[in-house]
Amino acid sequence: MTAAVLPARTTRRSVGLGAFRVLVASTYVVYIAVSFFRTENFLFALDALLVVAVLYALMSRAFAERTVAHGYLLLLLTLYVGSVLFAWVVLSPPGELASLKTLRNLLYCAGVFIVTLTYVTDRARLASLVRLMAMLSVFSAFYGLRQAVFGFWGFELDRLALMGSSLQEMLTLGRARLTSTFGDPLLCGFFMMAGLFLFRARWYVCDLSAWAKRFYQVGAFATFAVLVASLTRAPLLGFAVGVVAVLATDFRLTRRSLARIGWAVIAGLIFLGAVVWVVESGMLAGSENPVIRFLDTGLSSVWSLIVLFSAGGDESTYFLVGQSRDQRLAAWTAGIAYLSSYPLGAGFSNAGLFGFSLGDAGLLQVALLIGVPGATAYLTIIAMVFFRGYGHLRRTERTDHRRAISALLGLWIAILVTTGISSLATTSVASVITWLVAGALVNVRRIFPIERTTTISGAIS
Image (cartoon, rainbow, N blue to C red; front, side, top):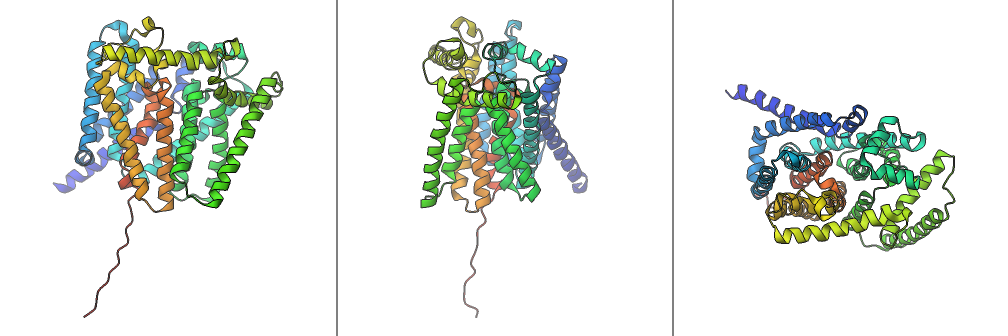
């Protein structure tokens, strides 16, 4: 009996984990097919892969073990899923298809989280997934550089046209927002941001050869260039906050480290001053050299973060101030007012009546769709993920473990900042990385166990 059962469990595990790996890989390339064939039906393949992975995870012994180990966490996840399903029932009329799609995307979070909790329980599996995502980040980065130097193909421009504002900004300001393999500048910026933290995690999760280290160094440079040239301020801000978090958690107070921080601050101020001077003077604009145009695009992206916090109203700053800042402030104000009157939230879909879209509300859109109880469970899970990772980081003494965990923790913080001010909190493709990282941080004690040394002492009689 035992011999007959064990192979079944092994097969069950390999099928579920295999489907999940294909899902992770597909998130980097599926929008090429979506853009080229002008249909989102390819996304149903991702749904099927996730369903297979979740079903096999739920039937495994590992999930039963995780249920015992993370009982409170899974209870919160059950409350969250129940709130999503309740909102689904309330929004069942055919006229609510857009909101129903968003609710379906919210279920992605739970599915990916369950699979990661079940399967990503050791260093080898985490290393294989991080290696896969890091390699695909490099591929996407070079695809984006091809767009920067040689321009967009026709089907990529068609995809931009569907978004309206991105194409309008390109035509008005003469700046191309890189989309890479994702068909959307925001998704592109998000995945490039995540890739930079994944490179650091890959560096310390397991040993790398000399050529592999060089490969990731070149890949990190290309990835950062595409992140900046995507002109997406939410991932840029998330990246900056995440880097600060990594430095803070991995910081050692010495005279040398303080000197480095001082020089970094001085260099940063000089760099920002140079950015403002170059962009405002227009000295690079209108160049026929594609490399100089690409440099101007990147500098304009950094400049846009500066303009975001200043007043403006002309055509050149509308996309930065009016669209990025003022509309979000209005969305948050109206969203909080709505929730104070309707705490269950479910049923809020006709956001046009309030003058804003759900995407403008950022992370608040989760509460607007599933209500305060479900959003509270969602935010509690987010907090528990952070404290699981941070608590273990403080107890870990091995340098490579600390730096791998700090990279994942920095990515988690960067994701929270990015989703807090954008529509990525309810994007199914983005949730694959988001909740894979969440599951890894919850399982961090098993992935990076603390090695304790024991001293045997006593007299020999």
